[in-house]
Amino acid sequence: MKRILVTGSSGQIGIELTPYLREIYGAENVLASARRPVPGPVSEGGPFELLDVRDGKAFSETLSKFKADTVIHLAGVLSAKGESDPLNSWDINVCGSCTALEAARENGCAFFFPSSIAAFGPSTPAKNTPQDTIQRPTIIYGVAKVTMELLCDYYHKKFGMDTRGLRFPGLISYEALPGGGTTDYAVHIYYDAVKKGSYTCFIAPGTYMDMMYMPDALDAVVKLMEADPARLVHRNAFNISGMSFEPEEIAASIRKVMPGFTMDYDVDPLRQGIAESWPDSLDCTAAREEWGFDPQYDLDAMTEDMLARISEQEASKG
Ligand code: AKB
Figure 1 (tube, rainbow, N blue to C red):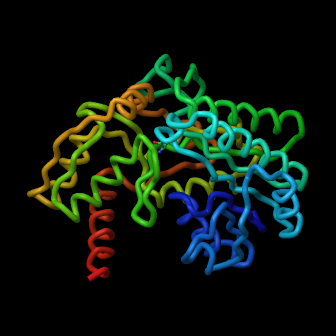
Figure 2 (figure 1 turned 30 degrees about the vertical axis):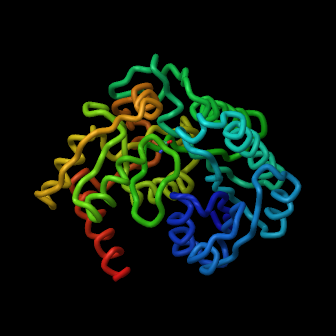
């Protein structure tokens, strides 16, 4: 990667990945884009353009003008939000992604696509979910993820395009809140722990999902995109995960730092149903073998860092 366009740079991943890429590749070589203005480091720390990913002409012109060689395509609508307006979710997550993929092909760019644990469904083996297995998701977000996994494979086979991608688990971070996801509880819990000492969880006890701390996700994107293509058997949609836990386990981890922390439940049937249709834990062997996936954070290490960072943020607000 030398000249990179990031879409969706205002989202939970983009807000951290953009500065991370600028550190590695030089601020002037990473063009951040979003549909709306983004205050802060994303627009102030390097080039920034307003771009709607569904506008193919503008997308292609932006790539050509910037002389981009890589598109990191992060723009998208998350799982629970997608269910409230499935056609809008399809429009952004599939039509927008197709437009981005085609603009990247026209301009000879490599293409990164963020798939998700949502690409699996209730008929997928739930424990140690294999890299290659049944994929029959039952929500529009998951259907879109499978569609784009297949389309990225197709563009590689048909056009020789350098398409690569990861199946992200729930991502936990403190720079920007996720919006409208099913795994969001595992971010909100840390904020409420610091601010209120308690949390009401919308996911039921005993519900396992894969998760990962953001620094490991950023490292995974760069490692995959820089991997020797000769080693990539799968290319798109690698299973990755840093940990798998259920709500009681994250609460117990918080109690190791904040013994007085309490949690109760008010389960949201929509997000609970989605969570139950997703794997409990992924098998990440292909990612480890093909490009050296190596996450550093376990649950307790992540908890310590999250609580410290959010406490600092709160203290600086005065
Ligand atoms: C969501 O919960 O929608 C996302 C995801 C797992 O793709 N975090």
